[in-house]
Length: 96
Length: 96
Image 1 (cartoon, rainbow over the protein chains, first blue to last red):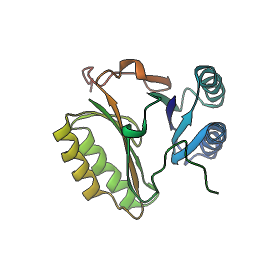
Image 2 (spheres, chains in turn green, orange):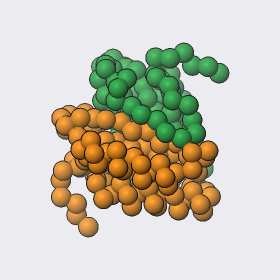
Image 3 (spheres, rainbow over the protein chains, first blue to last red):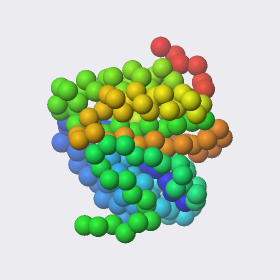
Image 4 (tube, helix red, strand yellow):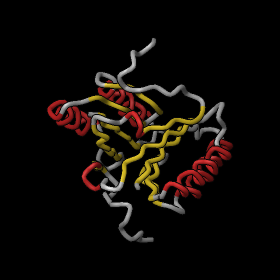
């Protein structure tokens, strides 16, 4: 299933930037960073629980917030993109 | 239906901060700002098209990106929140 993870942290603070880098590193093991603080991950239920636990251990719950949106398996028609970054689907190959 | 709108802009730039304020003002007519650049809006199809057109006219397509996620009508079980801001559902009354 596609899980959208949005992470809110004040990146003016170096510790916040570090946490965002750590969050991004974990999320990009399972998907892609589509915006600065938005990650789309393809996960099964077990992976989702594991990733949640990792991210919760990184975040500062007094300063940061994190939201998970469960978009299911048929997400292709549920996403639209506008603006400067190219649109892609999470199953597309990642071009580096 | 619930539409999640994520907006990516460099807010270190005053013009970017202004665009983000304008985007937020439009989105909060239909829903709530749940994170700095994440908005949850309850929209029908016509409202969605209208809001999209407004936001596209505000954004700078060479610098910003915007993604729309369509979560449908039964979104209550599709959202989980962790961290510092209280969880809420878009249909809950807004406490100011």
